[in-house]
Length: 327
Image 1: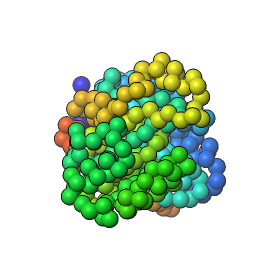
Image 2 (image 1 turned 90 degrees about the horizontal axis):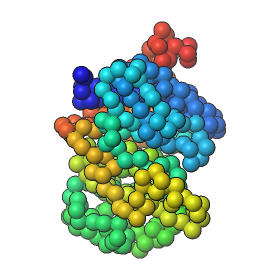
Image 3 (image 1 turned 180 degrees about the vertical axis):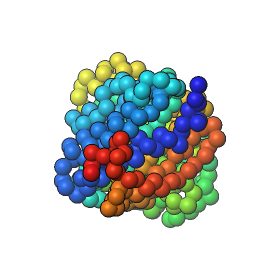
């Protein structure tokens, strides 16, 4: 049977399709159609793949947005048995408003290897490179975490950069970081990309902090593990939460008091992370449409090899089984 390793590079076909579908509606102010078209196009790409796949989790239900169904079967039903965690558009609002840093992303592994973190409320996330592995925990204060990571990277705080979503729920963290004197990059959307760049030395980003959605945590952890970094994730509990949320999470197999690390969210040594750019960003360039099709930039990283590949795909829409609907 064909191995996951053998088909890993072709998994970008799914994120490419989602990116093109979403990019058709950049700046039009309609978030729902951005998500719907991304799901439609990626579902069409899945239908061409010789896999026996299942989408075990997808970003979207929390916001009542279009998404893959829980445990939706994908592929032709023949080939390796694989599971996926999907985010067809990480940055739906950014796409609908024509802003930067929107991507499509997925995590893939053999069945039973990816932890489901339902799209139900938020999860606190920390990501950084390999130097701080086993040296930090979410029981530490923000000050302690920053100091340890900076020390391990042999960096002065004034040169140390933290990336986080610009959200009201992060105001106290932001205040603490400013007191420390570190550099701060606030992003509107896209904490999957933010997780990845902490493990890319030339990115200039050292640490991700903040609360975001669950599927993105598993996808980000898969990428971070493939790149040799470390990621910690824990259920974010807020006084505004639905009182029954923790019960629902427990019923879905989530330990609400546990800090998950990257090796628990993405188990084993056969893992793939794939992403494609929708709008221009720090990690990937956005979709560029041409008279005959589109140009899409993607990346794929995988285990056991740890290979990190970037690619540019030139699509021709005419007579293409996924994209001919555009023409």
